[in-house]
Image 1 (cartoon, rainbow, N blue to C red):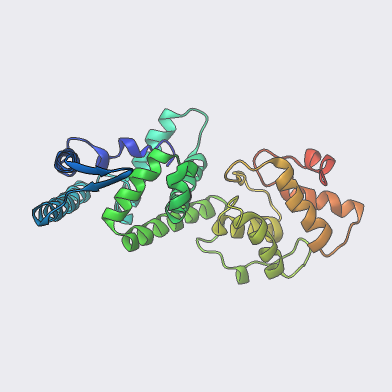
Image 2 (image 1 turned 60 degrees about the vertical axis):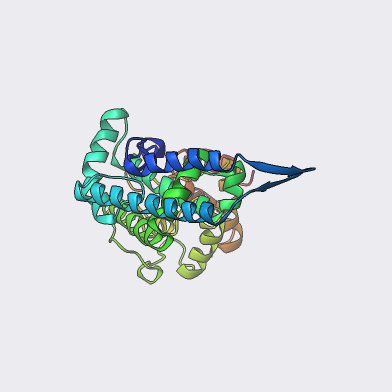
Length: 295
């Protein structure tokens, strides 16, 4: 998140009781399972009732230690991976200040974009755990490994609920920065740009941009509000996630112009559709988009 790195998270502190117990468990487990029998390529661990009882007891101790670490961090109002939303919100100003002091030429919009990208990518990694475990993690294998462990310890339902609240909080800040209401529904948007049914516009860009993980659903609604209703480019432009090729994005907007837009292919309207990309997104300008629109 912004400058956040999970390896530096308080939950990953090797000196806390949770990590000490877990480290001791891994070491002892290795010693206890070192006695093995081999039969050709088969390796069978000698496990008896005593071993299973010991393993269960150690896991319970580790789980309890994790809960105690979280309680302490919550009591002291310290930010950590998967912390409750109340802690996240309270520590937001301090973490923003650290980010702005650490990275020159940045502003709050950059911090919010980084936070959202991290939270959403972590969600995707955990949902696609098999691919992430094989080295295709969006946030990196080390992050996925720790996020998966911490997320499971916290509890999937709690982690998901809390993360969704954080995303809503960040998107509401984006909306406020752009002079928009905190929550935007499709029914709240008027299409004064080309008067195509806004649901049709939303469905098209949702398929091409949201499902491709280039924008979140909240960001798409923000974009439609400012570009199709207000027709006023915001000071803080939108940013596509996952660094898509510009030709891919241009194609999305060209197809909107060619196949969805109401006014057909009139030359003057072509420029207006190019501006939907060139005036609202970082890394694009209308002239270059127009010159390469169908390429």
